[in-house]
Length: 214
Ligand code: 5GP
Image (cartoon, rainbow, N blue to C red; front, side, top):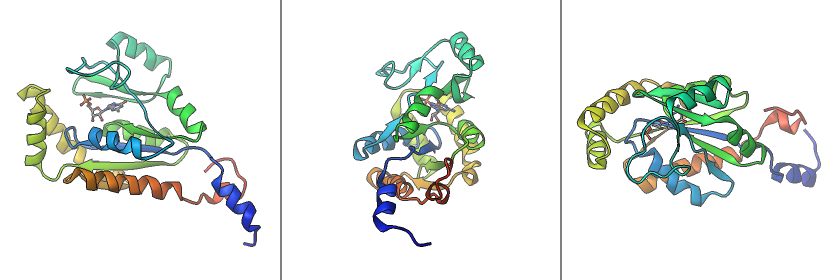
């Protein structure tokens, strides 16, 4: 392939569409902490705020941690097709607002979804473009139990439910593109950062050929 150097460089540097990053992994593995550390390190990176029917935990802020809504409202929004994906998790609905994500991606922002595995599967199936799926794991079961207990946000019963769910979620590891073991937080953040950075350098053959979709 022979092509004009400057033209090609100009083309590669223009902001195209953003990428969609899906981060999943057992509750208590530290996804949220990793994501919060990532955001200030990357320009053009946005976290999608989900909607949920779960009751707010102490300290959680409407519109910052979640949009908290009733079951009725969530179900009416499902019917209106307002979610890019949604799932029932331990008796509560969680979903990703469709319009927010589409607007950001169209505006050349990369978007992170911090969601559980069923949601990740829906994205893989329904998102017509490429999405990058990262699975964050705790270093051990004992460590996960310890994190859930010291967080003191859940009852013992809820902790046991989350542990069970964690082991089910581990079964979905093969559906993901990358894994990150969250033993040392800073290392885990750097690993996810490197994945994001690498994805930004990806060459999409179809775009180079002037086609609209990747
Ligand atoms: P938590 O109740 O601990 O905030 O969240 C429980 C689980 O729901 C976590 O694994 C979290 O990543 C996931 N979650 C949060 N928002 C969404 C969402 O919009 N969609 C899906 N499918 N899962 C979500």
